[in-house]
Length: 151
Image (cartoon, rainbow, N blue to C red; front, top):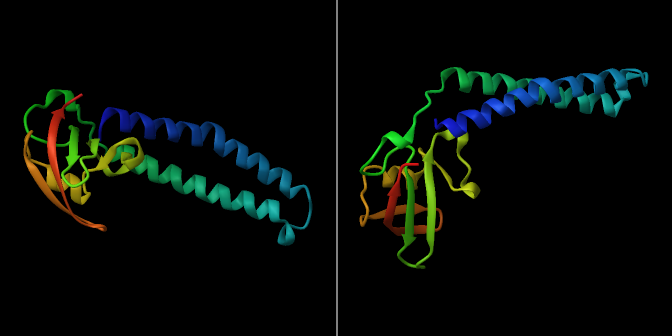
């Protein structure tokens, strides 16, 4: 996991524990004051939200306790974890830039590509100028590696 990914998950955990958890406890207490719990939609919604928060807290604590933070700035050479890779789609000439990151921090809309994705697996070990063939849900795609940076 990258340092940025670790910090983002750690911040999410802090917000859940210090803001979200106390807010849902207050919401449950307020809903209880309204009387009959069996027909109290506010109470059931608050309990459901509490269940989600507690589940996410446990999930984040597990991820962070096992996380190995890797500093990609110490790497050079071919594509590997942490690399920021600029590609061009050989069919559409569209350029895209992705950073290869761990599964918990992946977000394609932000350009953070899951290391377990077909594209990332195809890119590992490639160098600038290499072409990769990737099977995607939309069919076979070819990309050329334009640049590799470790930032």
